[in-house]
Amino acid sequence: MKHLLKLIDLSTEEITEILNLSDQLKYELKNNIPHPRLAGKTLGMIFQKSSTRTRVSFEVGMYQLGGHPLFLSANDLQIGRGEPTADTARVMSRYCDGIMIRTFEQAEVEEFAKYSTIPVINALTDFAHPCQIFADLLTIREYKGSFEGLKVCFIGDTNNMANSFIVGALKVGMKFTLASPAGYVLHPEIAAFVKDNPNFEQTTDVLAATKEADVVVTDVWASMGDEAEAQKRQQDFVGYQINNEVMANAKSDAIVLHCLPAHREEEITTEVFEKYANVIFDEAENRLHVQKAILVKLMEK
Image (cartoon, helix red, strand yellow):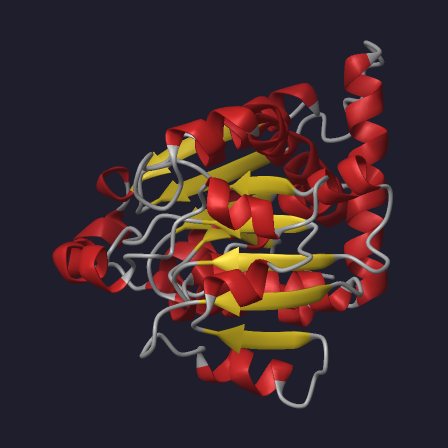
């Protein structure tokens, strides 16, 4: 594992290793056991998309690991003024020990990794959100004990969250049902990944999708970069909301996950959000622990 670009690149064993290391680092933090495993290391953090959880968790995580986080917006770098991605990657490789990038095109992260001589972490693209899915998997395992026999239902867009959650869930052995409106199709790479997999299903029927679900997941209807389609999506996604009726159809001990920020009364009602707020904010906290594990896995030498 040289980089973290998308979950499809990882084996089940590599995913499990990161989750186990996340558990260890979380335990050490909660018990005031220092773990400066990246002392003297610097992480360059490139943000072309705004962020709350990604920025704060990576900065705090690097600090807790004894390293130094360097925040760089697109306006801070020549990449924002047209310098080729390849050149930026080669320059930052001379200064830093790792690079985290949060941007639009997956191709940009892939090119960054191609020319970088240090680890590159995809902190979000329009195609994938692997760091978030590690947090989701860790949360599911904490609440359910294991992944065996579990069913995940994702209600909403076929976006980066769905792309990554499908891969992560299937790789650790869970069943996955995607409920989305007609016309919202899988990305070709994800469609190829799930082809002939009996543990995956896509449907337009929310109640059928949530039947006997152990985990119910959603995300905003219009992701960053889709704002121009927001009005159309408001119409398309009517009926694709996590509410009391939907949750009554899932298992009685089902949990709800949301990567945040949440648009209450759109993809999820305020009542349901608050009922499962403890789980959702445990999920948000787990971004810190899994990202520290990813940083250690890639940067500790």
